[in-house]
Structures are given as structure tokens and as C-alpha cells.
Length: 229
Image (cartoon, helix red, strand yellow):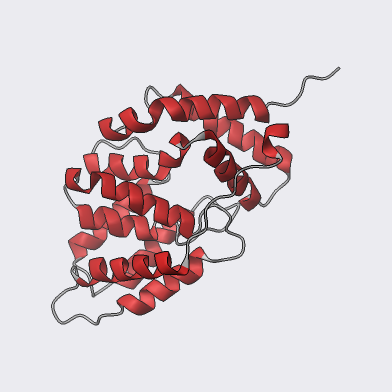
């Protein structure tokens, strides 16, 4: 796996970028507040930043969050409920405990607790549903659900050097032996390739599909165990 020895570093999220993200989050949160509800946007944002800065995060950190928000901006005008999709992106990886299979559910619960009694109930239900679709275990039929899934997977369509840096960051989050990581990663990536489409919206299919498939096939060749002599 010599191609993995010196990957291009993932660009860091600067303090200025984090400040801008925080202002944006507060704006989206406040404009959906119930009349008379307590404004805790700043404290919620500080808690989000703390979660995304946890030391065990190598991929699911502020860089992934910023990437997702950037991808959202490309398709915001195509969404039925853009604020729900955007808020779901802010929270979809707020809880990441390596090795657990219920991080999305726990992230959805985290959002629900933060939003309870301050955001409209129908808004909360919509955001929770969107977060849960980022498990990628259920095929979405609603366009907004398709878009959030595509945004979450869009880094697969990155240039090869960034794709490799992301892949190594994902591996660094895995809590078990490398052999188990390789087994699970191969199974996940091969399942993606078996799909008729990795990206379900036409926008991200046209933008990312071919490059994502090329990246995944190339990476699978690196992950495959060397033949025994």
C-alpha cells in the first residue's frame, strides 16, 4: 500500500472559517425559533464545536461539517425544506463513538433534545428523519432525503489525493484491528459499487458518480490482501 504512505493532508478548518460557520448556524437556528422561545443558538453552537473537535475524530470533524455545508450551498435552491436539510447537516455527526452502530440515532436524539420546545414540532420531526437517512441503510424516495445522503457521500467524488487522505482519516477512527477495518471497508465499498447509482439525485450523480466509482475501485485494489506466495 505504498500509495498510502504520504497522502496529501486534509485542509484544516481555520478559526475564521469556524467563526463564519458559527454565525451561519446561529442565523439558521434563530430564524426557525418558535415565537417567544429562548435563544440558545450560541451555546448550542459551542457544544457542537466541542463535539466535532473530539480527539478521536479524524474524518468526522469540522472539516467534514464544512464540506457538507459547502455541498449544501450548491443545491439549496433545489430543496423543498432547505432549513431542515441544513440543520440536519449540522447535527448528523454530532455523536461519533467509534465502533457503535447507532451514532446517527444518538445524533438525532441530541438534536431533538436541543430543539425541544424551541423549534416547531414538525420541523424537529423533519430534521430527525433527515439525520436518520444518513445511515445509508434505507433507500430514500423523498428528494430532500436523497440530497442529504448524496451530500454525506459526496467526498467519494473528490480528487484522488483528497479521497485518500479522507480514507486514511476514516481508518484512523476505527477502534479495532486493521484487519477488521479492511474487512468492513471492503464490504461497504463493494456494496456501494453494486448499487445502480451511488448518488440518487441527478445533480450529484452527474457531478460525482464517475469519479467516486473510479476512486472506490482504485482504493479496493489497495485494500485487497496480497496473494500468498
